[in-house]
Image (tube, rainbow over all chains, first blue to last red; front, side, top):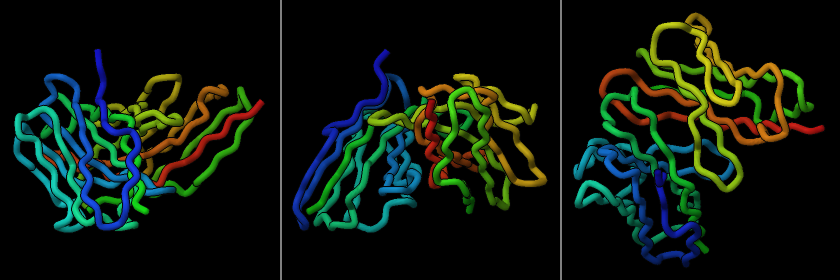
Amino acid sequence: GAGVSQTPSNKVTEKGKYVELRCDPISGHTALYWYRQSLGQGPEFLIYFQGTGAADDSGLPNDRFFAVRPEGSVSTLKIQRTERGDSAVYLCASSPRGAAQRDTQYFGPGTRLTVL
Amino acid sequence: AQSVTQLDSQVPVFEEAPVELRCNYSSSVSVYLFWYVQYPNQGLQLLLKYLSGSTLVKGINGFEAEFNKSQTSFHLRKPSVHISDTAEYFCAVSRTGTASKLTFGTGTRLQVTL
């Protein structure tokens, strides 16, 4: 079946602009995660949704970052007033149930964000 | 909080040779352990995971890892590598129980040559 998909695959924007990154999880997966991977680093956790609600947003770096999942499937990560330091690959993952970490997280290919 | 250390940023190896990728973790609570592989222009793919039970875990593509609690390590091994194993490998941990976020290491680039 279809895996996790993310759009766009690449996004170039100018400093100060607003961007939205989209994640389509595997159908039926209730848990959804966002991570950020900077160059030469491992992915860093941003936020975790269980259904429609954000169960853990402790990884969001500041209030310029916000994510929603209004219907419990597709999620959008929103970044306001982008800064050059926001440049990274943004990864989305989903898992069947979530809270029990025995579930594998399935990752999408990521969105490469470049802020000029 | 948990942390993961992958000391080797790059590991060059000849095809058909054995390889070990090292991973050490730090945590004050019980953890689950994972190895993910990232091929160029692809998403992270789970190789194997340790949840409980036998400390030797077998995964896909002939990889295995051994959980050593006393040394807080979870090294990844393969007895004979192939060119197609060239990729970035990430070790990750999560605390047991209700928390779900993964904490990753910085990755090890495995470069297999003829």
